[in-house]
Image (tube, rainbow, N blue to C red; front, side, top):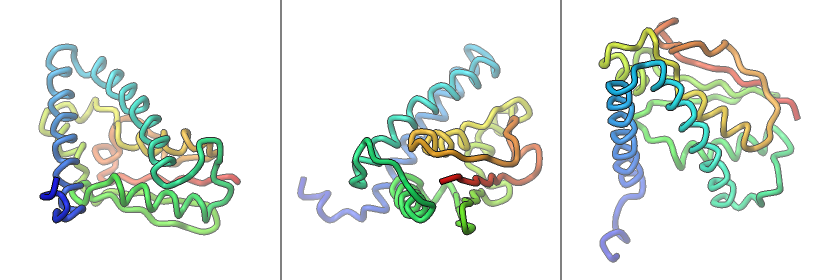
Amino acid sequence: MAYLDNVDIRALKELLNKGWMTHDAMWFYHCLKETGIETTNRVNLAAVKAMTGIEIQRMKRFLGLPPEQGLKSFAELKSFFEKTVDAVMPKFMKFSCSFLEPDTIHVTWQSGDCFAYKGIKGLDVIDRYICGVMPRVETWFDGLGLTYTATPPMTGCLMHAQGECWRRYCFKF
């Protein structure tokens, strides 16, 4: 289509992600109303992990990494992760990360500003919500065959429990 030749790719990424996140929110809301928070959490986590396992394989192909090839160093992971985040994370999610040498990625959301936290809080089940956002990132790492440790432990919603949401991943190459 000729129209798309002149569209700002970042604006298009924002638009498509907002549509996807609206679908995700509506799915979560209707599942919550039909089945309750426990079942919704379980199904949501299963769906996030299944989708993200496919997503990271697509990113490997998109970025030209052969399926059988893994990342052999923290520098390779940093490059791959930065490109993946740039491709799939819209600005409205307010996700940020820093790379701490020699082997650590620190991910965070601005205080009180996680899109999932705000949405689930509005549904009045934030005290029983199990985060589906961090498992997305972790399934990327798992799908890349990486060995890592993560802190702090994930239980529920870190933004709700601690007033901030961050996670530190230390890798072993």
